Amino acid sequence: MDGRPHFLMTDPGHYDVSYQINPWMKPQDWTPQRLAQAKASAGALKAALEDAGAAVEMVEAAAGLPDLVFPANAAVVLDGRVLLARFRYPERQGEEAVFRAAFKDLRRRGLVDKIVDLPPGMFHEGAGDAIWDADRKVFWAGFGPRSSRQALPVIAQVFGREVVGLELASDRFYHLDTCFCPLAGGKLLYYPPAFTPAAQADIRARVPQAQRIEASDADAAAFCVNAVNIGARIVMARAPDALKARLSARGYHVIEVDLDPFILSGGAAYCMTLRLDRTSTPTANLLAAE
Ligand code: ARG
Image (cartoon, rainbow, N blue to C red; front, side, top):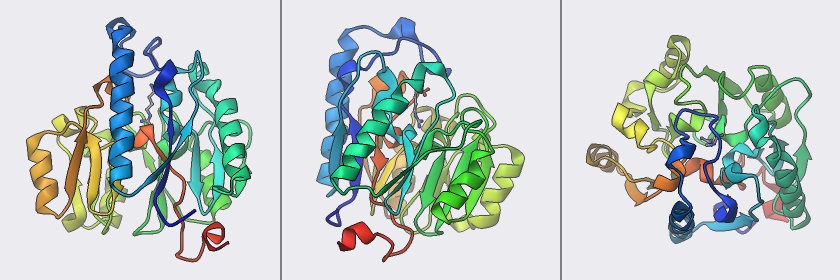
C-alpha cells in the first residue's frame, strides 16, 4: 500500500431491495429505476473518497446478492489481517464466498496479508460491528441483532487488541456502524438510544464528555452516523443542517452524498466501504514497509 487510505467498495450493478432483514428495507418501494440512481450514488461516494485522497478497490457485482454493496460487513481488517464474516441471515450468506475470493485476490496483490476464518457456532458481520478506534487503539464491537457476543474474544485474539463490547438495543440500529463513529482526534459521533444502558455507560467511561457528539434522532434516521472519516473530512449521506453546524464548529468538514437508494436497504457511506489499510501501530503494517 502506498500510504493513501485504501477502501473496498462493490459495484452496485446487481443492487436492489428484494427482501427484508432490517426495518428500513421496503421491497415494495424498490423500482427498477432506482438502480440507475444507486449507480450514480455509489459513483459519487467513490469520487468523494478519491477526492479526499483515498484509493478505492472494487469488488464485482454478483447476481442474487444485492447487499454485496455493503462490504463493511465482509470482514474485520487490521494490520493486513482479515477476519472473514459469517452472516446471520441466509439472504446474505452467499456473500461469504464472494468476499473470500475478493480477499484472496487482494492478498495476491499484496494489499492484505492473512485471511482468517471465524470458529463455527457464531455470527459476525465484519467492520459493521467491529470499528477500529485509531486514537484509543481498541476495537469497539457491537453485538446482539447480528453479531454474536462470542465473536468478541475471537477478534481480540486474532488482532491482539482490546475489544470493547457494546450491546445494541434496537433493531433499527442493528449494526454498530449505524450508531457509532469514532472521529480523527478522539471525538466520537454516536446515537445513545441505540445502546443498552450498560453500553452507554461503557462509552461514557472511556470517552470524556467533551469528546462525545450525540447524534439526534433525525441525524441517526438520516444515516449520518454511518460516515467515513478521513482526517478532517467526514463523508456522509445528506445531513441535517444542525449536524453539519455542530461538526463544523468542532473543526470537521462534512461532505454530503445523496445515498437515498442505499438508505432504502438500511445502509449508507460507512457500510458501503471497507477500510483495508488500518494499522494498530505506526510500524505494524509490514506490508507497507515492503
Ligand atoms: N440490507 C443490509 C442488511 O440488512 C444493509 C447492511 C448495512 N450494513 C451496515 N454495516 N450497516 O444487512
